Length: 193
Image (cartoon, rainbow, N blue to C red; front, top):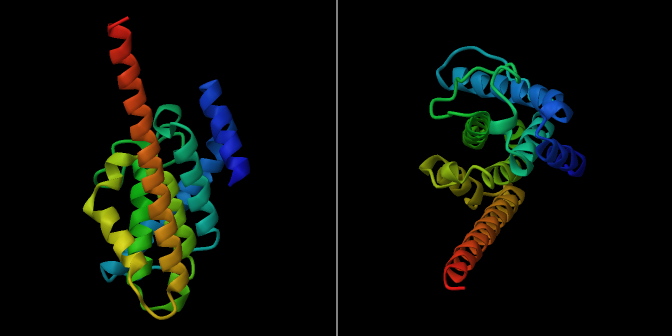
C-alpha cells in the first residue's frame, strides 16, 4: 500500500497517470470480472469466481482512489473497463461500485472461503470512499458496513476491520470539514481586512 500511495501521489503531482495506469488497469479488470461473476451467481447462472489476488487488486485500486484523482487522470478506456456499474459516472465510482458488489456478495455467502477476504476488502472500501464521499452516504455503503459489523461467530476480525474502516472514514470526513471551515473562515476574514 505505501508504494502504491507514493506512485499515486506522484501521478497526481505530475498530472500524468503513466506511473499507475498498468497497476490500476490490472486491478480494475480483476475487480470488474469478479463483480460480474458474482452478479451471475446471484442470478442463478453458472460461473467460476477467480479471487486470486482480489484483496491485492482492491487495495491497489482503493489506494489510487484515495491518493489521486483517478477520475481526472484515467478513463474507462485506459483501464479496459466498460461503464457497467449502474450509477458509476467515472472511473473511481466504478471501482468503488465493483468493490461494493464483491463485498455484499461475499458477506451474504454462507461459504467460509468467500468470507476470508472480507476484512481486507472492507478496509479497501474505506480507503476508496475517502475521495468518493458522494457514495459514502448511500444506503448500499451503509448496508456493507452493517453486514461487516454484525456480531457473528467467526467474523470477529471482519467486525474489527469494518469498525476500523468506518472510523477512518469518519476521521477523513472531519478533517475535510475542518479544512473547508478554515478556508471559509479565511475567506471571510480577508473580506474585512
